[in-house]
Image (cartoon, rainbow, N blue to C red; front, top):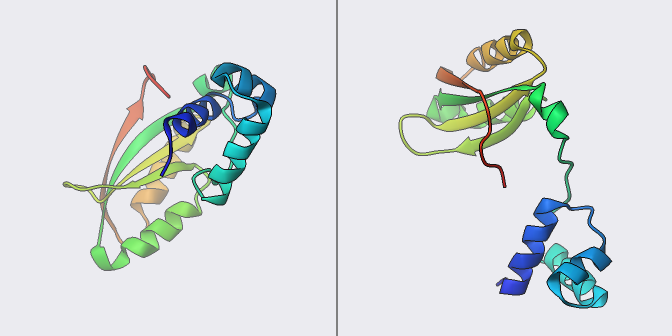
Length: 142
């Protein structure tokens, strides 16, 4: 079970996972030792699995992103997932309910390269159909 203090710490780490323990402690109003202990506990419990890189907005603006809705044959869905894991353009894969089985978030440096990625996803064995939406802008990202 996570506490309110844990949630506050996690929110700060989402903003900047490279923030120093001193900075986190100052913002939370606790000691550095307390922050370090909480982080270690959250890591041991598997709540924090790792840290990531957030790219600069200038770099992000140059990438073309899309949501790809995928319907997969049930018996081949694990094979589709494995193939998607191997595609570097795939940023996120969600399993969903509804008319589609998966939502795949992809990114590429150009429309031409995005088109290649979309064709590759559609050609995967087990994919029955896809529907893609190119992301024009991101209004909120937390």
